[in-house]
Image 1: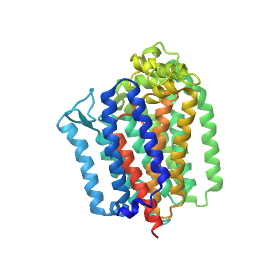
Image 2: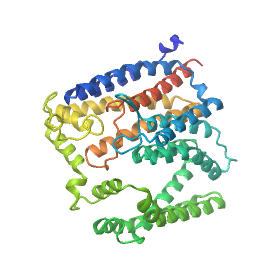
Image 3: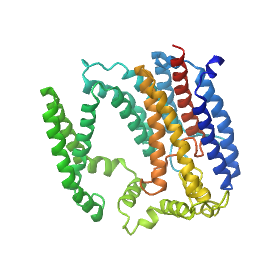
Image 4: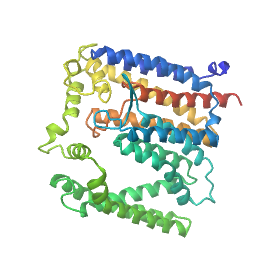
Length: 426
């Protein structure tokens, strides 16, 4: 067991520790020493867990009994929050034990990765693709629904993106799968301007009308390309079905998603993000505006460690979680940001290099899932810090304050390391 630790990718481990250290140092710089201490404890525990999962043979997660156990376990935890009506900040996301809070939705991401990777491991050309994808989606829907109802829209979106990435990586013809996704998205967006002028507000509807011509042209081009390139007549019917489903989704978006599923604060965030000229912009985008002020005030070299006024004077909300990136830039400036991006790029590159050398289908899908989880969360978090994405409450992997998020990522990386180690044993 311990011999496996000697075969790990040490560079990846060092980069993980460096990123965690950056997070802890930044948290302490805000003056919130209690959060800094808790994050340090989580980090020590997380590193121990990381090394533990590095030594556990990943093949155990392919066992059906183990899969049923972890699936029922996470489902039970998510359901118990509603059954016990545990509320924190008007949401049902955490189990609270004293000063400790645990967020099961974070661990659900790993469960979805392990179960979906096993399910889509065997994807032959003879399989009915639509049926298999439908069954795979039905498997994860109970968990997705419970997370959405917390409400936790950000984590819901991330889990669906992770699942789609695994399906995409397992599909026997990635090009056709990609075409199908494009057809669905274009068809759904195409119909939005025609379901009511007051979908959001006048300015946003004008935006939809302006891009609608482009979407229509894109749809025509994709359909033509599929028609010319499809080797089987059946796929043309499948493409037509995908377009129809996309149009139906667009029609029902207003009646189901907008009117009944999205919460008021989620609508406000979306409206504020899409329409920066809105009279409500100052209140809807307060967090983003404060984040951009912090980033802009950092300058070339930054204000210095623990000298960031936006965080120290409490102008920047969630400065240790959602907006820790802005906190870091304000203190370390453009130069510090470049160094941070280099470290994170090296970190992602090491995972990609492990993925490149991995041959097993299940192993590949697991790494794809973990990598997608990290990259998507990184992009969303940085995007909302600089105003390119709406605020969704997504943490920066390995850096933001939060024990559940940190442990989830470290467990996933421990599994990736074990796959890499097992590969060297053969």
